[in-house]
Structures are given as C-alpha cells and as structure tokens.
Length: 187
Ligand code: GLN
Image 1 (cartoon, rainbow, N blue to C red):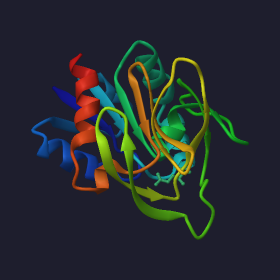
Image 2: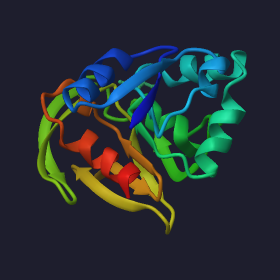
Image 3: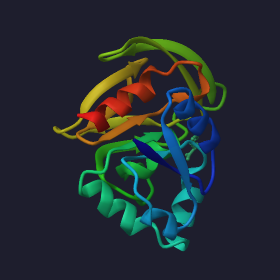
Image 4: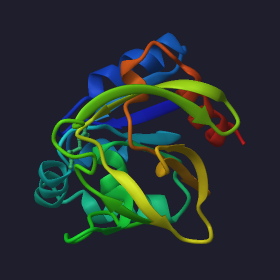
C-alpha cells in the first residue's frame, strides 16, 4: 500500500513519519505530475487552507484530485485538509468541495486557538486531540457519519471514502486514527 501526501504547504512531514511507523510507504505530491504515480490513498495535511487551495489551483491539481475523490479515492483530511474537502465553508468559497459538511474556520476563538484534549472517537475509543487554530463541522449531510465531538462540536467525520479530523492526529504519538484510515483503504 502506498499513500500520497499532499506536500504543497503545512504539516505533511508529520504524516509521513507516522505512516512509516505503521510500515506504510508514502510519497509527496508537490506537482501535477506526482498525481501520475500510483497510490491507494491520499492525505491532505493541516496548514493554511487558503494557501493550499490557492496552490492547488495554480499548480492545476484541484480538478484532478477532486475527480479522484469523487471516483472513490480514499482521502484523509486533517484540519486545513478538512476545510479543503468541505462542500461548504462559512463565508468562503469551497476548494475541493467533495464532502457534504459545513466547515467553520478558526472556530474556537482567540484564547482557545490551540488546545489539547482527549475525547471519544467512534470505533476507536479515547484519543488524544491537538487543535491548532482548528475548524469544526457545523452541520453534515445524511451520508456523513459523525465520529467525534468536543464541547458539542463535530470534530471528526466520515463520508464513504472521505475521513476528516479537525485536530492533528499526526502530532500525538498515537497511530490508531491513521490505522483507521488504512482500514478504509483495505476494505
Ligand atoms: N486555520 C487553518 C485554516 O483555516 C487551519 C489550521 C490547521 O490546519 N492547523 O486553514
């Protein structure tokens, strides 16, 4: 199994490290030609979604990635990656727009811009969650399964081949959520 990790901006190296700990090979997707390589799943890392969206357009990769996801390519978006996948973003235009969720950016206010907590993740149990200027999911369509909530806000969800987390599972030494994504690919 090989995972492509979008590496135009943000926290992609942390995902690569975690995948290698899981014994899974990965490579960085930096330009359109990288999409020609064969991969079984895609990770969209945290970072700055406006910058990532702009780069995906400038590098002419947005439509091809969107098409791949619509055709069933398994994708895991963390934080900014969640925002890229959202069909609706509060007060902004969407980017890939493949997942039927409404994302609200920088949604925890200033003081709480970054915080750490533990919460229940459906099918896994208690997991550590690091939030960095994170979004949350304000509402989700009927095909979306809610996987985790913090303070009544949806912070992880799945719609068929698409998995998203508002927090950064790649920053805690916990492999279970990545493994959950790999299970989606295996099935
Ligand atoms: N605040 C960022 C955004 O809106 C997301 C932060 C992150 O990925 N850690 O894109």
